[in-house]
Length: 73
Image (cartoon, rainbow, N blue to C red; front, top):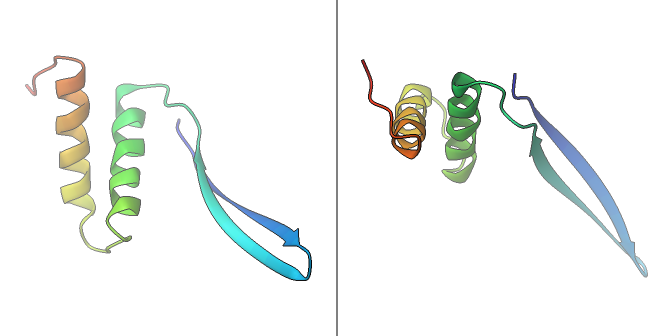
């Protein structure tokens, strides 16, 4: 199953400290995992807007199915 993890990195440049956050996602194992990962990336790309999970899922499903030349049954 694909998993997402947020990793924080702290860097020092002279007297300045900076912290950044990166989301790492493991490789998907199944078609459903791949759709889940893509839906999460859409959520991230669009500013983490709550309440749009179904929209993100359907868009991700459509993209992934098209990528593999599959049709919904």
